[in-house]
Amino acid sequence: MERFIIAGFGGQGIMLAGKITIQAGLAMGRNVTFIPSYGAEVRGGTAHCHVIISEGEIASPIIARPDACLVMNSPSLAKFAQKVRDGGLLIINSSMVDEPTGRQDLIELRIPANRIAEELGNIKAANMAMLGSYIRHSSLLTLSAVQLALQEFLPSRHRDLLAINQAALQDGYDHA
Image (cartoon, rainbow, N blue to C red):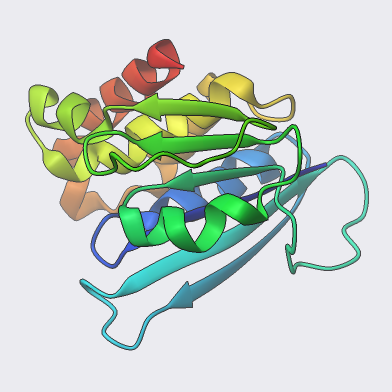
């Protein structure tokens, strides 16, 4: 079972990353849960989602001590860094977060997600760079399954962004 939280602010594609992840999990025959949480402002406010992917049954969709957390901004780091379980994984968007975590008991990855996305031509792909980094450490998901889920899940009005998002997934995977 993998329990993780993706956190940032509204407009960073937090929910999209979570939904793509659960689509990939379903396609691989896993059990999944997804709980979104939006701040009052939505776009520009806080946003995070709880995602669980499991080979067995999932007793509760609530995550108190995640195995991993992907944080896109400083407020998310402040809110979630201390909740990651000992020995867990904390992936930080180093393009937006400079602060130290103060934790020596977990694996910390700093991924320049915004820079990766900007170099590919669209800042909105930063979420995919972060997701790719997580997939590199996942034992239940594969990069190919997530890329396929992205292809199937991406709305037709955004098909022109598929190649950029696929490349961001790969670059994040390679950075991890």
